[in-house]
Image (cartoon, rainbow, N blue to C red; front, side):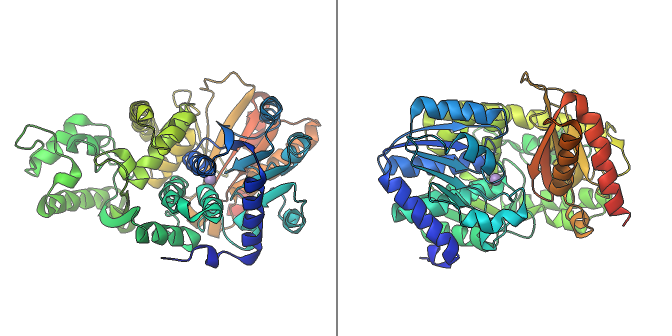
Length: 498
Ligand SMILES: [Mn+2]
């Protein structure tokens, strides 16, 4: 068995031990987490661990901690009166809000933050470490680890669970689902750092398995034509979104779509020769369209299997599981995702329905962009299409660049006025290709600095930003979106022109 906790930096291990103590001493716990796949997985891990410790607890998913939502969080805490509060997959960037609105309660003994996002102010790292024992912040960034590829929010939650009890080893599977949702295996080839150790631990304990196979979504679940039709990563021109073309593609290759019992065949039912024929043809198509051998070789990759989840379901495959969780979060039903993660069979049909809707929305949005629905600004490309809901705009622009529907020579920013929430804030998402990071682009830095300048100029809070260098976001008051875009574009144009 891999000794995972022994490879964690001592300084981080000390904090994990503090956190374990805080749990052992608590009686009533309240857990808050982010709504994306990583945040949902992190929460499911925390909840499982608390259940196994036989604690009384409540949990909530929150789409973002900001100056508005911290008030709601604070009211929830006041109502429930826990002696321990746990934040996962957020909290570091909002530590001041937590200090001012959460840790102040008399009944609340300890607060734990399990995060992996970079702090707002990187100089604060040392002082954060010296923070009081009332607030325990566990974040790899404070321990010379990288929160973008070494470990995710679910990974930090898993270390915490494992420190609590070896009985929680099975939760390694959810930690990998979270890391997959955060694209932590995307930056290089496969997982690295602590993620890799968590994966190895999960494999050694029999909860995970890795195979080489087609990286498309739905290899366990989708009838072959629909496997192609709904594939958006990479986007396949003339195939993605076109049902008839998918049937023709497979017919031309002499692939039987149904088995002897007249049931749809799925990818894992195919023999090697059939798989090879399809892969060859897809590679030709990608080379002809994108002239990108790397993209073509990306058709085949490591597929992570969760051995304890039911066969021929999305929960069997880390990538599909994480997409299902994202779909729950983006449709404002993150609690369904948490329940699915916890193995609640009643939640599974709703989770799968939300996933299906989500996949259809993505394919449709990409077709809009393929028809040129984006504009070029000096420092970025802008997608501002009311037909694309704000809940998926971040994923859509990421996929659009991944498949080169939008060029990668500048970052892409997506905004959407299409929100089901009645809020004066507009959500903005940014994505940048890794080549741009090498040239000095850092989306998080750009958005945070522009927000600071604007907040100072207006003397009120008009924008809040956070994220990572390659993927960041902001909430901006709707009256100030145009200015925010102009300033961000300008800032990035200056970096790109050196
Ligand atoms: Mn995360």
